[in-house]
Image: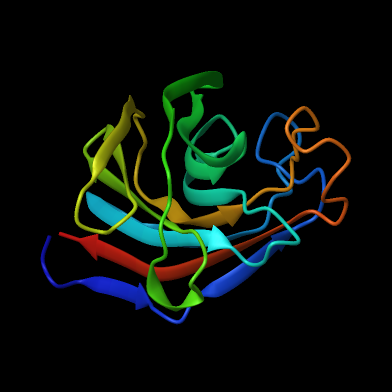
Length: 183
């Protein structure tokens, strides 16, 4: 991609109260979004803000409540990554897996880089623990008329089968090194 880009290197922490999500009628998850048209690549380093709250969130592509995708980490455990969303109002999972994370950027905690690329209607997801070796995490065809919105989000839908009774205050996710490339 050419040099048109946006960068946020110092990071931002997003906290999500318990029960915040982007599913069905529950669209209350906090997010930072910007409008975009055409093909793009977006990348961010995501990590927990502290040991006291888990991190849950990632990258979000949004058109409307029936057409969006989420590429996120931590929803079903701290090392889980997942690409999923709604296409024409129907839920789809395009990729799911687990990986170990390493430190990236200045926060020193376990972190993972998430990258999402759009080429026409095709969205491809990748993750990396070192910023050099990238793993494919899935592809999803999502026909969207421009403009759409792209950004970061955090959720607070804490799975009680994984976090039994813990984290009553929700989640806290740090996003660092946000980069956006357009053609």
